[in-house]
Length: 86
Image (cartoon, rainbow, N blue to C red):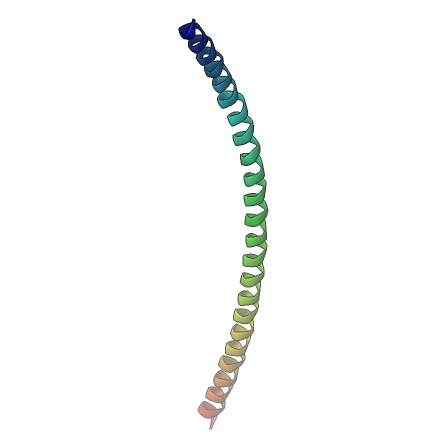
């Protein structure tokens, strides 16, 4: 009789463990992945915006330096022309 109780209780415990492990684990994993994916996507988007702003600032500085260099070259060419004409 004791063996019947052990067998029946272990069978029901196994069934409940299987039910719990397959259904609950899948729900938890799928739900947590959805949250993580959306968080990572949002974080990636924020990083991309930050990087784009940084690159725009760097590009603006480089364009300003390029304009300064162009002015310097024009001034030097003008001085060279003046020097050759003398």
